[in-house]
Image (cartoon, rainbow, N blue to C red; front, side, top):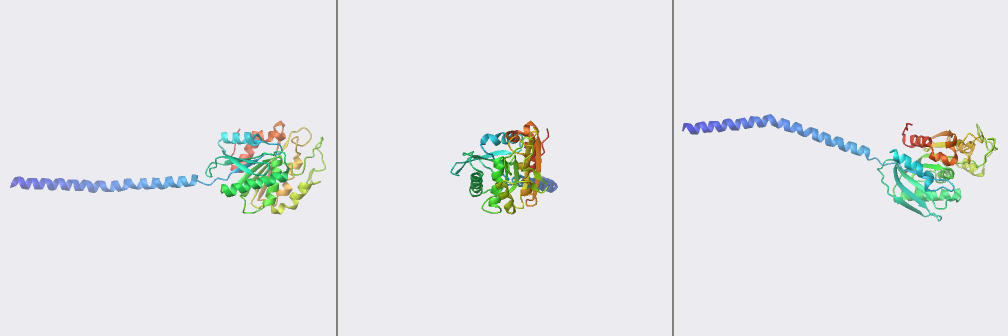
Length: 299
């Protein structure tokens, strides 16, 4: 009988001990679960902040241009991690648009290069072709906002496109525009740097027919547009980049300033500021990257 009593007491002690241990460790288990939940919430928040829809940038070449015109700039920016090479939009002579590459709306600053099959056509045709490209981007890629960079006639055609389309919601909203060596007021260059089209404080002394149209329709320029206008001066006395005078390029001030949300201009000088070298100039790369994406490049 004593053995039974002792056995019962022993079992009671063991059960009591296990119960005390369980009570001591249960809060610790609950506490251990809480950081896991917090960590999961933090991770989700970080993923959402990264997964923002990107704004792609179009690159439009000029007269007689090819995929090589902006190919170097795009490659350099991609190698520096500033952009993601995405689409190449080829436009046939009849205006038909075809595309190569992949577009990821969550990629880092995606680029869209526009290449015209008939690269010696008129600015009017280029303007229509840009319109076709924009409609393709809106309808088939569901792109709502874009930036654009235009060299030479590409910049002229982009300016024409902006005034033609205005705030039409059929097309993506063009938020930022970079013009590089764009002959907005013609191609006249003076050997001594003086022409009838030189600028005054109130605008050009003389306007080309195209420039007159730009000024006539400037009120159609969206007021949310931000513009960077780049000119080149080789310092050979002509006050030009060899093809476009500084005055013609910077006449854009009187088209955009006071109508667009902002307008700024920059003139590059020296041999690397020649017309066809502007888009190969790493200092121009840096200016474009800073304006479009807020990326400051260090030499």
